[in-house]
Image (tube, rainbow, N blue to C red; front, side):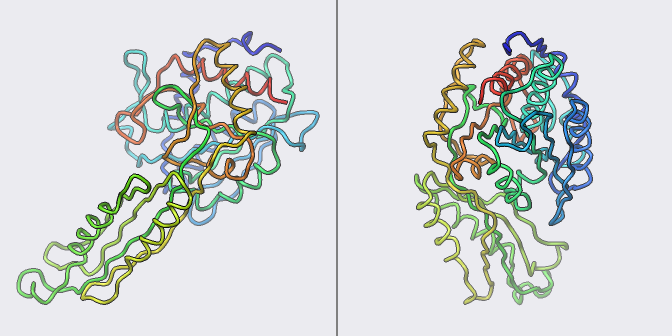
Length: 376
């Protein structure tokens, strides 16, 4: 069973990927994510996979678990862990339409991470069509909430990973085309300022602006950034009427550190900002956290296999730890051999310039097929 004999074609893969990109699936619109899960479920069911739709909770969409037919189904094998939610709101296709230019394909979520998920499905499709059976059983788990820290499906991912020998995470390739063998720790925080309302024209001095207080706190929080631990505020909501002094403002902050102990100190520093002593109350509550994933011998052995397959295909596959966070944080931190960011090459993820390099579709499908056929 030589994976290099499989007929992967980037243009054909792109044609199959296009409907996934045209199905917008922002995290916070559960019905849209569920429609995206429908598309993926159909593709995997056509391969003969045992399909399980897992209801969503906490307001998020549902998940999809597909077990490929195998004589050893149910025994430890390979888990493909991917997410089908994106950061792009409904209507982004108007600003970022699916299009092809200069060997690149554009569209919301095409790089992060529908492209990588699709090439894994394509790899399995070609293996099934060839009539081959992988040495290990393969399970595909697609989840709906990675872009907001995986609050509703972390335990689902961890329980499924614990049943398997290896985890493949087809997040986008790094800018140098490399993969990820470790990830930094990440913590999220919910912020709130509570002020005193008043009429903004005839009683301005009576009010205490929650917006102004939050603006000062944003500067304070981001000034806490060091080489060991970074802080950023990415969400800020307040106000309904310009003629009212705002009484409440909410925000969200993110902290990242390369070492768990540095993140723990960062969490302590953030929680220490809680203050109810002044005219405006400032509240900080801790949200979801991704643990540090430090590569161990199992992950590095998996990397060496992956690197060898890439070399056979004809490209280098450097590796390293990275920020950004993914569901690989969870599986890698559990000590399960995990290889992350083996998805498609591209740039502009989370922006209106998100795109992939079309030629990388066949390349990465070959890489996935090589792993499915070689891991035992």
